Amino acid sequence: MGYSTRDMIEKLKNEENIDISLRTLNYYTHDLKMFPNLFKGKCGYTDREVELLKRIHFLKENTSLSLTEIKELINCF
Image (cartoon, rainbow, N blue to C red; front, side):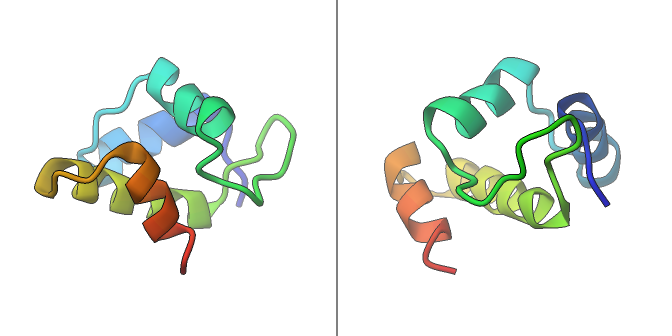
């Protein structure tokens, strides 16, 4: 299933209790390029990106890794 940016934010907030802003999600997606295989389009996020965002959130909250280090780590899988 594909999710728009706003759908993705709502899904994370409602199902995973992760509060992420539109600006943060866009930063991860476009500036940091955390999701290299992201489909370009209105509903480009998939369940894979949901899982990656859950990992990013966990690592940000529980480690002292930078976003660059987190990106390297999650892209190994």
